[in-house]
Structure formats: structure tokens, C-alpha cells
Image 1 (cartoon, rainbow, N blue to C red):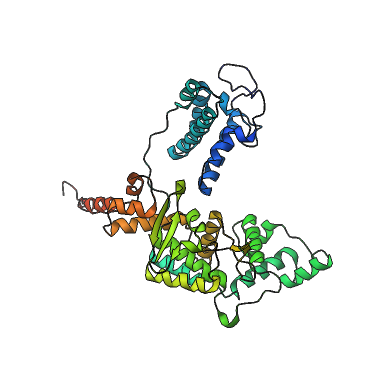
Image 2: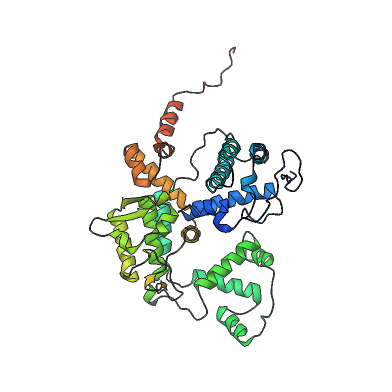
Amino acid sequence: MTEQHLPVHVPAPGSVPAAAEEVPRARDPYWVYLDSLTAGDSRRTMRECLDRIAKLINPAAESGAGQPWHLLRYEHTQRIRAMLDEQGPAATYLNKHLNALRRVLEEAWRLGLMSAEDYHRARDVRGAKASRLPAGQHVPPEVVGAILAACDGDTGDTGEREQLTDLVRARTGARDLDALARLEQRGDKPPKSTPWNEVAEQLGYSSGRRAEERYRRLRERYPPGSRPAPNGQTRAIGVRDAALLAVLYTTGVRREEAAGMEYADWDAAARSIRVRGKGNKERLVFVPSDTVARLEAWLAIRGRAPGALFCALKKNGQPRRTGNRLARITGQRVADILIERIAQAAAGRRTPHDFRRTFIGELLDAGVDLATAQAMVGHASPVTTARYDRRPDATRQAAAERVHLPPARPLRP
């Protein structure tokens, strides 16, 4: 499909006029709106939406920053909606972009950059009506067990090191990572530099990009000179990841919420963790005894220092510090950890949201009332929680089994 855009600099009906002067960041509706979002995931998602819309307004725009949002009028926003709709996205995709557009217009009005009448007319864009099943999939207990086993088996030996050695040999011709490091220290070039797509074909990776990503991750995890943990003990990173994944599965917290947990949020006596969710709303989540055991094993390594509960680690397994506090990981890093551990467990693709979906579904299957489930997972509306209820599916499946297909039999012999 040919990419469309709104003519910014052409003074024709329906075009978006160019900004008369540059808007300072402090009064840019784009930044004011994004800065108001407390959740990192929400900020990243809405920024991507606004950047896409900005390219529809002006294909030369690198981002939504500094764009003439305050000059948009009803005919412009209607055209933006039509252009998004013509691209054939799902209703949720369209509504997400329209919500970002409405919010940035609201900030333009609050900043006094557009009149109330222009604002209300410009934001009066009809959304798409649709009902969708919750994203993601159920995570069976055996898959969770396999992921935990992958964490427990992380002793820093064999498997992954062999993968890294194979990648080094295929890519550079060096015998192993230590040999490659010695070459680099002397300033010598490796014997060869094979394209990643050829490395992928040789070693069975799905693409050159996958092979390169795997190489970089393994090289970060196993720097030159690193050795396996003594006596086959699980490395600190394996203990941390197991505790993190146990919390994700048994509490249903969002990945950003898990990344933002502090040591002070953990109450061992009450077996609870204080969580800061979307909108900076706090709630308590309670963890079962087997998850407590995973947490205590991790805390025995982490220590009781202030800072992130699931802190970042150095290559030697020691907690990384920022001042006198342990440094936190990001929500994206939580997702990356899960992807890496699932790959080690050969358990198929899963996401942190799949853990959340499974937790909510298990609660409702167990007969927990909707209001309690909503409070436990931090949803703003019970309608959102109800979408995760699998019981109607089971009821409909049982009803469908009552309708039988007649046997194939001719009317006349």
C-alpha cells in the first residue's frame, strides 16, 4: 500500500499548517503528555503512537516532538483517523492511537496553545467499536516448571558456553572467546569475518539477526576468563531469575511493577510485596510459600541493602549499585529475562503478560469474586478483569458437546 501523509506545508483545505515558531520543550504538548505518564511501558507505547501520527502529518518528522499539535483542527484529526483506518489495523490499535492523539490535544489546550472550542472539536473523533479476547495465552504449570528448572540449572557451564564457542568459530575463525579476546587486546584482526546470515545457516539459527543477538547476549553473560560456578551451584543470576519468574507467575504483576519493586516493599512476616502500579497506585500482593522460598534464596545472595528487590547484576554475579542503593532493572529487561529462560527450557514463546493472564484466569476459575481479582491485579475497571474469565468458554464448550452430528445414512436403501 502506498504510504499516505497529510500535506504540512501546502496551504490547502484539510492540510495541517506548519508551526509558526518552535515550541520549547516545557510547553510542547508532546513532552508534557509523555512526562505525565508514570509507567515506563505506557510512556514508551504512547510515544510510539504519537511518533507514527507525526509521520502522517509530516513524513520528514523524526518524532512527535516540536510538531504543530496545537494547530490540528477537526478536519485534520478526522483525516488522521481515516488514514490509520485505511492501514487496516485492529480496533485496539486504532483506538490506542486516537487516545494518544486526544491526550496530546488536551495538553495543548491546558497549555493555552489552542482554544477550548478548537480542542473539543478536534478531539471529537469516533473510535472503533470492537470486542477482542485478551492478548496472550495460558501458561501451563509444566511450562513454568521447565522455566524454573532452566534457572536452577544455570551453573555457567557446557551448553551456553558451547553455543558461544560455536558462534565465535563460525564468525571469526578464532578457537574460543578467550583466543578472540587475546587477538583484540593485541589489536590483531580475527582470521575472518563471516556475515551473520551465513553463520545462521551454518549453525541452524532462524536468521542472521537471531545469531547476532544470541552472540552478543552470550558474550555479555560469559566474558573472557569467566568460569562456571563452583561445585555446580546455580549462579546468582539463575537464583534471581527464578525468584523473579515465581513472583510474576504467582502474583500476576506487570513487568514494570516487578522491575520497580524495592527491598523495603517485601514484608517477610506478612508474605506480601507492596506494588506501585499504573497511575502510581499502590497495592499489596501476597505470595505463596513456595515463592517465598525462592525469594529467600535470592535475598541470601542479594543481601539486605536498600534498592531494587530484583537488582541488576555485574558479570561476576555481584549486585550492581547506584550510590548506596542496588540498581534496578527495566521492565524490558524483565521481558528479555523471560524470553531467554523460556528459550533455554525449549518451552515455546511466552511473555510476562501471559503470566498475568494465567494468574487472573486461575483466580476466577478458583471462584474468587471479580472485585477481589480486580483489586489483586490492579485493574482500574472490573470490565477489564472480566475479559480474562475463562469460565464462560468452558460453559459454551460443554453446551456445544450436546449438539451431535447425525450419522451418514442415505434416506433410501
